Amino acid sequence: MVQRIILDMDPGIDDALAIILALRSPELQVEAITTVSGNVHVDQASKNALKIVESMPDLKKKPEVAKGVSKPLSRELTTAEAVHGKDGLGDSNLPEPKQPLSKKHAVDLMIEKVLSSKEGELTIVTTGPLSNLAFALLKEPRIAENVGQLIMMGGAFGVTKYGFGNVTPAAEFNIYSDPEAAMIVLKSGLHITAVGLDVTMDPSALITPREYEKMRSAKTKGAELVRRITRSHMASFGFLALHDPMAVAVAIDPSLVTRKKYFVEVETRGEYTRGQTIADRRGNLRPKTVRVGNPITLCTGVLGEKFIKLFMNRVILQT
Image (cartoon, rainbow, N blue to C red; front, side, top):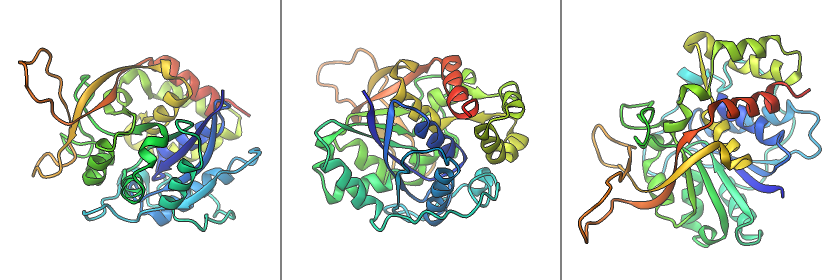
């Protein structure tokens, strides 16, 4: 059965790879791509989404791309051009897109797609700050009841030894960028699976120089595109973390990860802990002890080799 999804993202190098993976996976039908400020400003993020879609001329149907929220709910915008390049795509200078953006705002398009679907039929995959989804929930709370699941790339929950922050010692970028939005989403009642740094930074799930050499030698259009986007990042860091493609991969094949339900809270007021995602990992508690936060499902392990194989086959080795 084909799963219908909305991709909500801030492209972004790894967001771009997630788009390619989603569009090349027959298990998924991408209904729309909604964009948000994060890695880059939403204007550039929207342009980047269109660029990636147009780089795949074999698509039978191109998804609608809608521009969304330009800044966090109550914070100054924080971007990550230092990691993703001035254009957000590794300074790859891909051709300017010809496809126009949707005339609808991303928040309105998201609400429309969810409410026009049968209950539980649509999955939302978020790979950027949760600003769009938070605004959608505030505007139309009924969508929480209609969405099948939310697969969220975000958070560092400390449930594995890799689960610490990447923008601060405590916080992962997407949650740090708009912690108030994350708090709204986590309290919404959505069925959430969080793909955090606990699994995306597992060494078995990283693109190392060995895998990158396979990209360099592959003669496919996919390999050429990915090399162009990731070349500067690999030169600077020596590896490539597939944060956002892993969230898409969980939608494709849930068996790639192990999971466990935890109560989770988001820190919005801490001087040094802004955006920290706190999982209540306490075992046996005294009667009447209150758990912290709201129950969501956290990914606690990944079959890294299987995930990398899926990514390489779909994104790199396809003609």
